[in-house]
Amino acid sequence: MGHTVEELKQEFVNAFDRTDIDGIYFAPGRVNLIGEHTDYNGGHVFPCALTIGTYGVIAKRDDRILRFCSLNMKGKKIYESSLDDLVPSEEANWTNYPKGVMWTFEKQGYTIPSGMDILIYGNIPAGSGLSSSASLEVLTGLMIRDTFGFEISMQELALIGQYSENHFNGMNCGIMDQFASAMGQKDCAIFLDTNTLSYEYAPVKLSNAKIVITNSKVKHSLVESSYNKRREECETALKDLQAVTDLKTLGDLDEGRFEQFKEAIKDPVCRKRAKHAVYENQRAIKAVSALKENDIKKFGELMNQSHVSLRDDYETSCAETDILAELAWAIPGVLGSRITGGGFGGCTVSIVENDSVDRFIQEVGKNYKEKTGVEAEFYVVECAQGAHKIEC
Ligand code: GLA
Picture 1 (cartoon, helix red, strand yellow):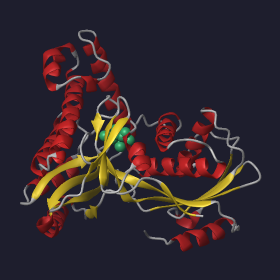
Picture 2 (cartoon, rainbow, N blue to C red):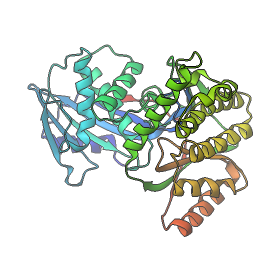
Picture 3 (cartoon, rainbow, N blue to C red):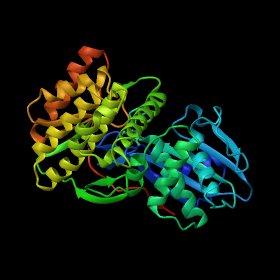
């Protein structure tokens, strides 16, 4: 984990010069196995929570002051603010995430009675696309809920996190990341219908294979604006389709109906985006059925198709993640490999047979380094529990 609970407590004392702590919490990052860029299109996603994430130590104050300290920041700088000043600003840096969650609480009628001191430590690699911001949002929500005794479900905490990200931090993300962080369950991925928020836990205990995340270590600029643009393109496509057939979201369509009506989408770029959203949603549904039938091979093939679609139709992959996927596909024992998360860099996720994991890490690592000059990182992961209290 990088820091023991005792160390976190000591760091809290060092940062804020007080020993009365109300609680220590953890919220995980996530990896999405399949169902990418479907969560704002009324489709299905299939993420799981990870064992890496964000830790938080909280103590309430008698006044309205907010103090934040992150062990990940050089010099462990303390950011001071106030409950009366919940507006996003560049100077507030990473504290815009917890402040956004507090702002959302207030906006939704949960009056936070006092300020607080919060110490944060995260072990999700920076820029990896494994949802460090969602984990920070869910963590903040959970800490505030418990510390001040609000009655809010974990699912609502996920929605609060998403709302704050959309309206305070300007990223029009869907619900997947916050949902996975809040609702994760050990050894399971969450099959979530983002249209209704109904969900089901599907066991992902693969007997002879592992989930391997490969970090490309690149993050291209303009990720947020490109992401928001994809979302707009899907909305344009939806409007065009609604002129000719009855549907609420792209997730309402299967491949057949999409093919029947697709010419109604005037702009060819928007048509490609919608094609991805529709087909990817169907792939996620099929992949979960395959997993239930223990057909991991089929699951892997659908993952590969997902990558191709993200590369060619949705255009959220990039040269580096394409290289990682292609290198993975060439290795025997790799059942499937695809870019995961928002895209434009970040990670791929692969299902690799146990016997091939070492070879996978060695060969993909070596060839990726040769082709890009970058040293990839590998994490063999398990599906983990969602956000929870650790101590106090
Ligand atoms: C980011 C967003 C999610 C989701 C994915 C793509 O992680 O935060 O809501 O849209 O991208 O599947």
